[in-house]
Image (cartoon, rainbow, N blue to C red):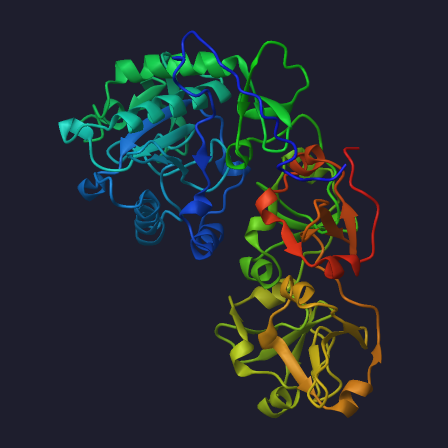
Length: 529
């Protein structure tokens, strides 16, 4: 069966009566991905400074309501995506929080945007009581209304208000809490480093209900909001969720579970952003080699059935893209043996910040380039040197032989300057052809090319071709079959169920030419087993 995310959508409409008015479309909150407002640079900044992982992703116990306290955002003309990104810039880059503080943001037209990166329950930065050190960011979701409305400043638009109630009701349902619950619960305290403080109040509260005197209060009638959200919760409690590709899930206690038992439940279409908020911990998954895996212990690369830890963000950035990382459980991480830590990309030029010595990475070792004459004789460019933190090389890269002006080290990207017919990778003393620009673009950079003479080119015999980097998801133009690259082969993913269960993201599929994909050897299919 071929994968095509549009072929799995059934066009069935469900009408209902009862707690949710008949004129309201029964759907998920339709949360828009943070990629609608965040740039690649924004996401990279967050992943380098405040990466989401299971150590800061907790069970949701409270839903807290704010406004953004920016009067100029009380506008129906300004683009809410630009507003959201400006808040990100303030929170992440100037406040030093690593990311936007809110988990979700709601525009005046009712649109909902994912804020802080990570899954459901990821700790934000939206409610910390300075006077006491009580940190309500733990075990909470922070929702912000774009604009200033608190303390009677302005009236919340109806679309924004109704969207807020729907989002709160949905979050209450999928996290198995009640908006009307009045509880006494422990709160994390900064000074004691534990849950030593206490909160008594509603699970759904605005900022001012928790921190007296704060202006984020009475934005909406909280009695109305809790009751309206409770109505939505009851509807969602009696629902299952269908993904864009036909997979059906129950979502309870913050966990999604595949189900085939629909019965009389409502079927709610859910988008990829929303379904990816929830882990599937029903069993331990088996991942193909080439997968990038992350848990609270860190990030690792799966190679020959073992995890190679990636101990430094610079090492990660030299090889991979953060969007390709798959979040897994601690049990899944522990199911793999650990191998030696991953090194910098082969052929990479590096220098530690306070050390003038330049090295080239080859065969997982660092080889010193002893002089500028040798450096330039090897065709290297000074601008291609990557500066890394002091001490990095001693931890991860043993010393190899000192470089000479020839032969070129493994990892060098060669071009015949006298007859530039293609780019080839030097590995194990042989030139490995790179068949297409698409394959090159997934793992190399044109700035690293070394141009050699015909005699130098001919001094190396030709080896096997280089294909797409392991872990890349590919599909050919005009075809629906999706493949995962693993051990130099393309492995067909047999169904949308398998694709989503393994944590892959549809928007990470790289569409390539049919000829480029057909040139890649075929491995065994990836199944649910």
